[in-house]
Amino acid sequence: MSHLSDERALWLGQYILPHEPALRSWLSRRTVGGLDVDDIIQESYAKLIMAPNIEGVRNPKAYLFQVARSVIASHVRGLKVVTITVSDPEVLDLAADEPSADVQLSDREELQRLMDAISALPDPTRTIFRLRRIEQMPQRDIARRLRMPESTIEKHISRALLQISNMFGRGGTRRIFASKDAGINRRVENEAG
Amino acid sequence: MQESIDGLRMKQDKANKIDQEAAEWAAKVDRALSSDEQSDLDLWLSGDIRHIGAFGRMRALALQTERVAASGPLHSSYNASPEEETTQPSRRRFLLSGGAMAASLAGMATAGWWWMKPEHILTHKGEMRQIALQDGSVVTLNTASEMKVRMTEKGRHIELISGEALFDVAPDKTRPFIVSSGDTAAMAVGTSFIVQALPGEPVKVLVREGIVEVSRKRDEGKRPYRLKANMSAVSLPAETDAISDAVLVNNISPISIDRALAWRDGQIDFQGETLQEAAREFARYSDTRILVAPGLAGEQIAGLYQTSDPIGFAKAVAESLRARTEISSGEIHITK
Image 1 (spheres, rainbow over the protein chains, first blue to last red):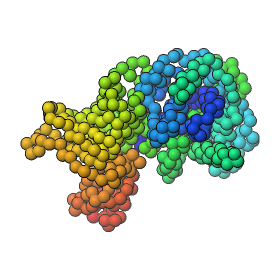
Image 2: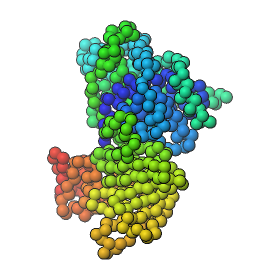
Image 3: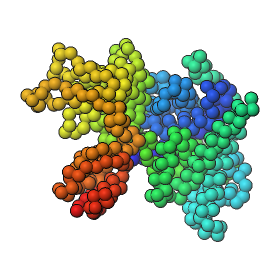
Image 4: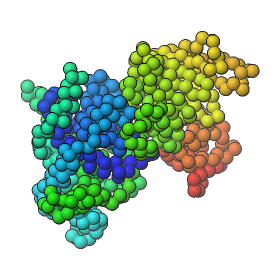
């Protein structure tokens, strides 16, 4: 049994989630051997969860694209399991850049996107979600306050997460990212072709 | 045409279903899991790699929404100050388990220096970890194991300091893949093999595919032992050279190799091992010790068990042997 700390989930939320829209739009612009974009995204997150030493990555966006590329490659090669470690020199090479202004900007954009997504939730889901995540009220206390069964609260939390996730991913913001990505994309295309 | 659209829809439905289940689990984790739920979650996570990703992503989203709170009232965060940007939400820990989830945070090295030196990778008791090496090879490290990886232009060097690992080696004729443990070395070009270096036991090599050459430092000048698929080699320690100084090479069945790899699924496969041996095997994975009454030690055990559940094993065994179990802190006694 092993532990995955909140640190890793936080890291994902802070450094990877903001770049998911860019990755999605990049993936959707090409067909990769019949692979589904959502599958690639989910599998990429899995690799990022399983990778050791990930906190050392200094350009998470480049790293995310690299991981997604390896997911595609592993399917193309028909390999069953390919995990990623930061020991990959190519990734280190990519990761050598300082976090750019672009990363910080997209962090704010992400928060804004999240806020928009929360605001767009229908009530009572929105109220429940706000009480839980923003007021930090335990599910049990919310149930008591709103006189609802705990299981109902749990369902609303789960529904809220799914809806936020859907707004964030599928149908989420599409954005054209600037030159930095273009460089990575070229690399990937070269290697794929 | 119609078919491909349907195909696409099915795929999206599938991804959506995974996300939905992931959201349900994230909501449950949000209010703490019962131990039954924890096992169900483990089971779900181990079923499909996408489950792990979707769940982690959902957790990340949930935690990010706490940062929304930290960054000020709704709709005003665009001007959030830098201090607020870095505010971290509370750090409740959550547990993920199951083989594939091995995501130890040990060695939080920063990029910049550490790839210069051999990479040191270890697993704790009960942990399993899969590591992709830069050459495309994959190492699956079993419980309580330790290894060092050194990649050079001329060769790929792994030192298995202790424990057990499966090596799925990417073919590269120009760079042999060498696993050494003590004075025994197994060399492969492109293949799949297991090396065991368990405490107090001779180093053992099992070949699943391809060809592996086993040699030892003390045999310098001798030809290496050549192992093909479905062969094993046992390298006895130097102290026993007086009895036999050879590496013992045997043919084994593919089934026994699969059995030997049950740990990759978090399982142990017993087929006639004694209860004493089984208890020792469990001790590799868990600190909960199984103590067997002398009269039962020689009983033979068969079946597939979870490496993470020594108590379940002990109870199942006790039931079939009509014995009793007593559980105290860190120990399970199986008695008549």
